[in-house]
Every structure is written in C-alpha cells, then in structure tokens.
Image 1 (cartoon, rainbow, N blue to C red):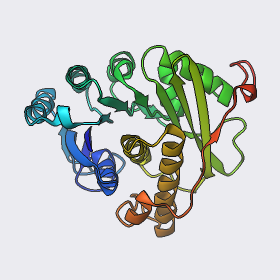
Image 2 (cartoon, helix red, strand yellow):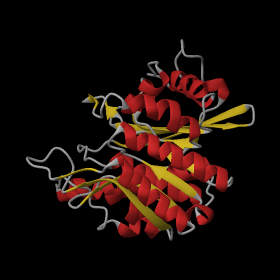
Image 3 (tube, rainbow, N blue to C red):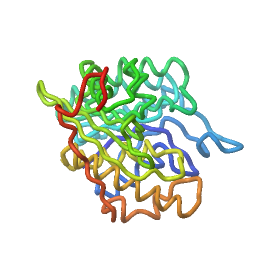
Image 4 (cartoon, helix red, strand yellow):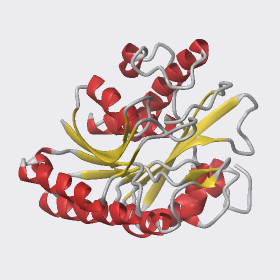
Length: 298
C-alpha cells in the first residue's frame, strides 16, 4: 500500500508531512513524501527559517516519482498545505495526470486555507484554485468548519445545514466530505465532533463522532486527522469505521499532549495508540428523518 503525500515539511515540530508520514507508516503504508515547503518550524514561533519551494522544483519532484512508477503502485494521493498558487496548479496537473494513468487511484484533499480564529491564512490566489481545481478532482476532502463554509459559500451551524451544503459541494467533485473540529448548535457542551457525508450513487449517508473537547489547540491536528482517515480508507475500512478510528486516534494524541503540556503534538510518544487507540469513539449515523433542510435544526 502506497500513499503519495504532498504537503509542507518542517524540521522541528509536527505539521504537514512532519505530522502525516509517521502515522501512515505505523499503519503499514509506504509513504512517498513530496514537500511543498522546507521550514525550520511552523509559523507561530518567534522565528522561522526556510521557504516555500519553487513550483518548478515541486513539479520536478512529482515527475521524478512518476518516473519511478509511484503512480502505478499508489492507492491514494493526499495533499495538504501548498504554499503558493503555482504549486496548487502543479499539484492539480499531477493529480489529473495520475488519475488518468491509474483509474483506481483516489485523491484526498485537505484544503488547508484557514480557520475561524485567523480567517484565511494563505495567499488570496490559493483558495479559488483549491476550490475549483483540487476539490473538483478529489474523492475525499477534509476541511475544518471555516474551510468548509468558504468552499461552499454558505454558513452551516446545524448538521442539517452541513449535510445540505456538502451535497451541493459533492455536485462539483468529491464523493466524501469530512468536516473536522465542528461545534454545531446541537453539539453538547464540552465536546467537539467530526461529520462525514458520503454520496453513493444517488443517495447520501452521514455520520458524526463526538469526543471530549480538550483545553488545547495545537497546530497540525487537521494534518494528522487527514493522515489517519486516509490510512483507514487505504486499508479499505468503510467511511464510518475510518471516521471512528481517526477521531479516536487523534483524541489519544491530544490527550497525551495535554498531559505533557507541550506546544507540539506528542505523535511519536503515542505511536501505539495511532493504530490501536485505547478509547474508541463510535461514529453514529445521522438518519434522513433526523435531518431537516438548511432552514431547520438537526
């Protein structure tokens, strides 16, 4: 099993490929890691060294792994932080080319654009490319609530609104939409949840999984979740099982991180729980009868 993971890379800490590669390897997946940045650390520290890579260099790296036969043996492409619109275009061209060469290959796009605290934190020319090109090519997307609303162009404060908006988004590309770190109008106090909406032929199914909300918010949690969900789907786990596994494993990492009191996630310390989390949170189906339209409540 092989995943091509196209994301940022940092020397210190755990974001991008530096958060995603090890968890996927722990699941027995061979990861071909292609960097979009080479940085000393994530933003947020007093200093940061390194740079976003030139788009031509990223294109050359992708061409090089094609020449080694990586596309033919790959089961999934995963992309995350891209760094520039030029890199986004390079990745879109690569994914389209790869899917044409290997029709069984799937593409998971983590549309790293921003969050509710900071708004858009990427250059203004990146989000339209992610929406119009990458999401159109994707089989799976894993936005946070802010990114989801930006991609849909609509607010979603209930599960019903979220499912309606996801259906609209699916008409333009992905068959599975997973919204992470959601706090909806009916999310219980002290909890946080992740919702997955999936299109199968002409019908839709949806699930939600809730975990306790911990008093920390480290960088890279979206990158880690996307990697864990991708690993489960590569292993052919159905969407609700993949959702449950990813949510349970990331809770284990965050629980240990909170106990350690560190800024960076304790991913390596949590290696055993990446694969077999001790505490499991089950995904629960959201029935059609429970979901009203975007004007109602879930």
